[in-house]
Each structure stands twice: as structure tokens, then as C-alpha cells.
Length: 126
Image 1: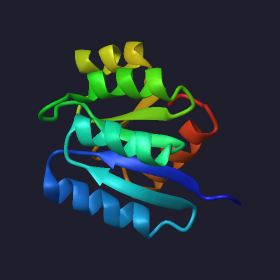
Image 2: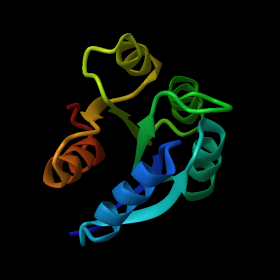
Image 3: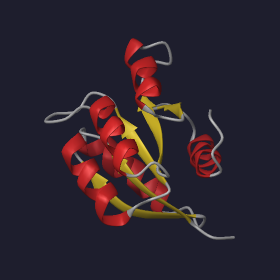
Image 4: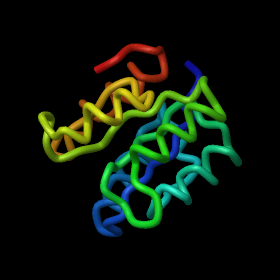
């Protein structure tokens, strides 16, 4: 089975590092890079052309909604999954309108995060 190539964007360093550690330890995933804001996420997407981008919404410099819009415009094949605290956040709906395929809650167990990433890579919304 080919590894799913992905990037993550999360402005809170401890959470970003914890998530990166979980994803690096998953044999079916290839974590290409971590961004601290939307601009970095866009740069990483352009550099690596990942299959999946796991995207926080509220970040400095460029928020996740605008980063999603720009990534989907430049690289339509990249599946953006929103990484959020609240499922009913109005921002989630804005991100879906911007081109995100779905969302994952930040308190999801690691296996659900991995499953969500794989589903997105297959083009399935969650």
C-alpha cells in the first residue's frame, strides 16, 4: 500500500508537534512538512504537492480558509481536511465552501485522525 503524502498546518507549536509525532509513527503516512500559518501551508503545498493537507482554521498571517482556497485553486488534487475544535463552527462551513473535503476534530483519537486522512486521500468526505 502506498503511503499517503500529507502536510499539516497548526499554529500552536505543542499541538503541532504532538500531531506530527502521531502521524510520523503511522507507517501508512508520509508527513512531508509542518506549517505554523496559512502562508507556510501554501508554500509547503506548492513545494511537495501532497495528497492531503490537514488545516487549522485560525492561524496568523493567512487563516486556514484562505489557505484552503488558494491551495485548491493552484492544486485541485490536494484534499484539504479542516482540523478544528468545534464541528458546528461557522468557519468549518466556510472552509468547506472554500474547497475542503471534510473536517476532523482536534480531540479525535489518533486512529480516527489516520482514518480521516486516508478517507480524504481516496476523495471521501468526512
